[in-house]
Structure formats: structure tokens, C-alpha cells
Image 1 (tube, rainbow, N blue to C red):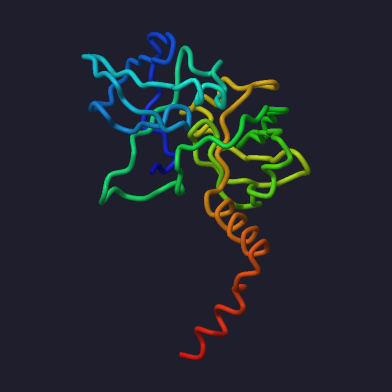
Image 2 (cartoon, rainbow, N blue to C red; image 1 turned 120 degrees about the horizontal axis):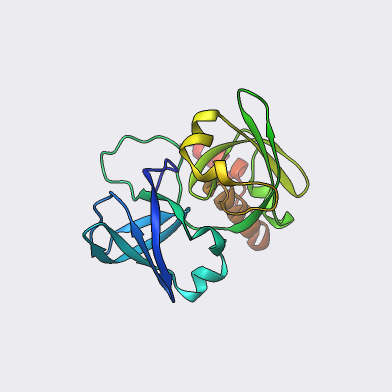
Length: 205
């Protein structure tokens, strides 16, 4: 589990086959789960100046691999007792989005990202979303895209400063929206209890 708050920007030393090797200050341990550009990956080797993670062929099919070069966002998994900020992030990338526009508003930036329409129901206005591992707030949702507003600090301290029209990014939608949608779909299929019926039954006791 992650929060979407980037711990550091690491430098890619190599990406050969399924092994991505990073130069990072984070002291990882073998077997650690670490989110790299928002994808939860496992540490398979520890070096004096960083670590290596493995990206299976399946993972590679669902990630914007062109962003796994030069520099990447790094966030280690949460530990029990850590201060919780950002939002609940699983590190499971749902889709690849494409930046369609970046507007400099002076004191902030509007970033527009297009995504497959099937993911739009899981993107909630004023809700949370993870873009390349960064926890952000959705300001507006359209038919096949959404708008984010990013403050200068976030733009400066993340790789968003490098993104432009046409850039592809890893997108993880809101976990709770996905779960609720899944539950409701299966309720309709199985004619199981509705939430109103559950509340009615609970009120009797």
C-alpha cells in the first residue's frame, strides 16, 4: 500500500529485459515492494548506490515504458505507524493516459489527460487519482478525459515538469470507486440485498 507521495526521483542506470536498475538514496531491502512511476514492483537486487526491481512481461504491457528511462518517481510501501497523507494507492496501474494539454495559469497548471472511456466511471470530480505515482485531485471529468490542477511545488518536485502534449502516463483510478462499482454490478447480477435493505435489517436490531 502506498500514499502517492513521492519519496525521491531516482536515476535509471539500466533497463535490460525484465530488470530495472536504479541509482537511489532509498535503502531498499531484498523483497521490498516499491512503487516506480506508480507501479508496485519487487526489489530483486540491492546495490551500494541503489537497487533493482523486476518488471514482468505482463507488467510491461500495461505501463508507459518510455518513462522508465533517465529518471523515475520512487515511493516505498507504507509501514505500520507511518503518517498517512496523500490517499490510498495500491500501485496497480489501471491504464495509460495521454496528456492532451498543459496550461500555465501563473500560480498553477491545468493538465488535461485523455483515457479510455471505460475508466471514466472510476474517476470522480474532487476525488483522488494517481498519475505516475503522484497523488492528485481531479478537478473536472469529461467524456474521455479529466483535468488536474497542479501547484508549482508539485510541478517542480516531480517529473510533471517534463510532461507535454502527447506524453503518456501511468494512471491508477480511485480504489474505492472501483470496489463500489464491482459490488454494485455483482449485486445486480445476483439479485442480492441492496444497501437500503441492509440498512433496514440493521435498524431492527
